[in-house]
Amino acid sequence: MKPLLLIDVDGPLNPYAAQATRRPAGYTTHRMRPSGWTETKALRVWLNPEHGVELLALTEWFDLVWATTWKGEANDWIGPHLGLPELPYIDWPQMHGRAPRGTFWKTQYILEYAAGRPFAWVDDDITTFDHEWVDEKHLAAALLLYVDPRIGLIRPDFDALADWAAAL
Image 1 (cartoon, rainbow, N blue to C red):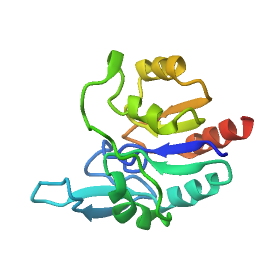
Image 2: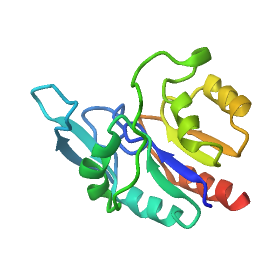
Image 3: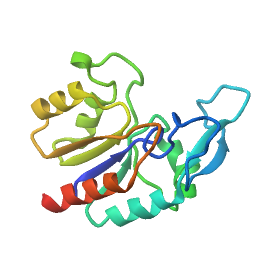
Image 4: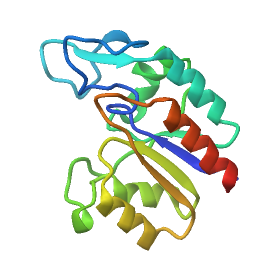
């Protein structure tokens, strides 16, 4: 069984924290209205189509899963722009709630979803507390890859994921 690659959208795929006036090179701008978006103005999302190519190449080693607050809507709004097929997603029992010992709220649910299976997780909210929690609670191999939300996923990130999976 392949390890899971758990993919956050905002930060890794959508570098939302980049300068608002400068779209990052290689990215296209999309205006979206997912169901949770209540603002009058559509949400600006930057996506790089090459990320889809890179993620599909990683399916040699991983099973891809959305690990985002977009949940299943990532299949409607994000995946098509990246050329990704419909992916399973983590249906968070609770979003933005309290989390154990200073961890990010997603971390406890990531471990539940992985259910002892090796996984790599890319997110812009991973901290030392999350690494410690996963090391203590998850017996299988795990790679927690922090992605700068001003930059998004870059070549060394994809290389690190492939190298980690190949070494398992």
